[in-house]
Length: 220
Image (tube, rainbow, N blue to C red):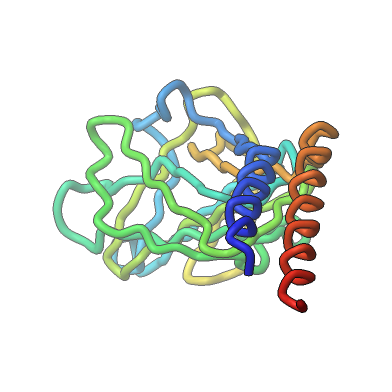
């Protein structure tokens, strides 16, 4: 294979990546990922309150088509000591207005105490998830252990929306409330600009011509 192949291929890949910039799909954080640490949603295991496990979710709608890259949530522990310091976070599809199938799941360990404000946790997508503009999705937080007592802080920007809750794995019910604080980032699926497409075409043509010449020379 021609030595010319790899530099051209690398250049083409770089140009293609630059043609799809990262963008914010949804965010209700304040400046520097701030939120309201004084109120929010409790996420707890059955050993905390009357033997009931509490899962909580928030619905959001992407502002544009994108491939998910990362999610940041304003979560922490309610107490500075004791209990399992983890939650299970999942990105779910919407099923008739409530959380449906989990598209990806992450475990957030070693959660810090909620104060001082504002603790945040970030997860990174490990597989390709295409988020479609105008389609509803859910971000759901579940306790990581039976003695987890975690807190998902409310946004401080006054953003309202649909929140989901359940107990002991029962069906979710929804209500309108201040949404918990989170941010969803993605890689844009926008079509590259014409100038970028022309440059890509030139790169590919050059690669093919060079490779063909190398093949022809090898036949003599």
